[in-house]
Amino acid sequence: MPENPSPRLDLRSGPQRVFAHLLVNTAVVSVVNYTVWFAVTFWVFLQTRSVFATGTIAGIFVVATAATGVWFGSLVDHHRKKAVLQGSALVSAALHGVSLAVYLLTPAGEFSDVASWRLWLFVVLCMAGVVAGNPRGIAMPTVVTLLVPAGLRDRANGLVGTVTGTSMLVTSVLSGVLVASGGMLHVLVLALVVLAVSVLHLARVRVPEGRPGPSPQDPGGVDLRGTWRLVRGVPGLLPLIVFSCFNNLIGGGFMALMDAYGLSLVSVQAWGFLWGALSAVMIVGGLLVARLGLGSRPVRLLLLVDAVAWTATALFPLAHSVVTLTVAMAVFMLLMPFAEAAEQTVLQRIVPYERQGRVFGFAQSVEQAAAPVTAFLAGPLTQFLVVPFMTDGAGARAIGGWFGTGQTRAIALVFVATGLAGLAVTLLALVSPQYRALARSYAGRAPERRDVPVGG
Image 1 (cartoon, rainbow, N blue to C red):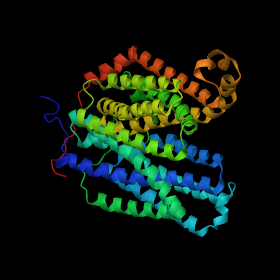
Image 2 (tube, helix red, strand yellow):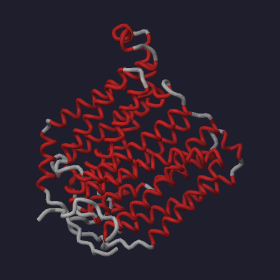
Image 3 (tube, rainbow, N blue to C red):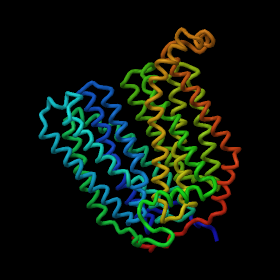
Image 4 (cartoon, rainbow, N blue to C red):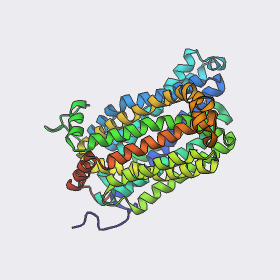
């Protein structure tokens, strides 16, 4: 009997309709939480003109995300998914409410001083409210396992990727408009209204799920040791997480330098519109996954997609042109939902449902921890090593005649090296025994069936 007699998702009835409700609810909450993050970054820079402050805000989010991933995953595993979504929204609302009170009670002049403890109290409260929304991101892949038939989970994961792209597109516009119109007051008021509506909406949605409970195989708690044993026990699973970690490691440096490179080619207004358009391309990628699926070999597809993306990354800096940059970034954004959906689909199949939250949380912690390492190192290393190398050093003398010299071409050289490193590691992964072991694990593991009522 085939895993799925229907080739398409049916979001109009049954458990898949419940999934659609949860997906839309999560999308709206993600937009408003990330709007708070972007807005507080913009607002703090306008208040203090401190790049250090904006970098610290990004660091707060990444470090908090990496530190809380496994704990949030344990919450997802040991509580009903609807309760996790509701609890996350309520905690975010409470923290944003306290942030609003601090904002209204603090004299405006205090926020202009980067050393003001009231400024950083406000920032930490806002970012805590944003981080409190992270359990939703961990819960959604487990909701796919719970509510979507096994043969359609890759398509459902594509819709999750579409939501991510939509959130990026809306957030980049909304945060700037709100800060310009009323500072953080309008941002936080909107956040509280949206979160209240999301809680009321979820209260009307019935999710067909049982109450999780401890078992001899899963005694409960965070159980980091048990999660580590599970990750190591599945052939090829740990290398998959390490591979994603490496991608984030070199990708962090890539993204840290991208704004400086792009702004050397176009104006800041054009750069903002360009990234808005690229976010729309990511939405198209997610919809393609939802329409076409990933095929029967998602592990292989993941690596092939990465190979294409890194090839584009290595080639576009060879020409000092916004056209090549745009084409390469469009390819990258189009393929990103395929890679993310492939990783989620593999984990949903090879990890027992009752432990998926902790494994997704563990993967999030490991992968997120890598990006800030190179993000913080990329700027100084490029400025003090690569720029002199490509301005009047050995690099300028060796390849400057055709590649170009100066700061912008130094950044371009870092991009080329980054792309080649990513491509080399991806090709090595394709021929590695760990890849073959993970592919066998996926092919040999029967898809987990979740028996849920037809209504919902």
